[in-house]
Length: 79
Image (tube, rainbow, N blue to C red):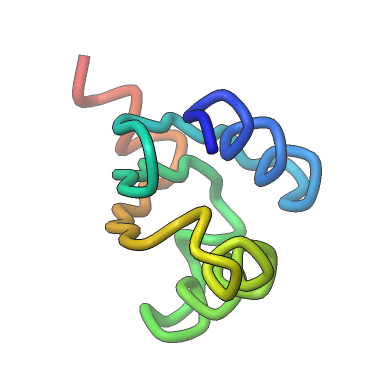
């Protein structure tokens, strides 16, 4: 699976969320930028993302995922 595929999949499924993906093959690092996700508890955030990635994790297309969550303001402040 390619990083752009992960990005497109998650952005299509997670409304109002910008997804930045690094990595290749089956290991990805995700930065998820969106106020709705950032407002959730850490467990709920991960559940939201894994719900969409589980088919690819199950078939081995994705092996490892790390995630960081940012509100839009926090992401803008990083620049």
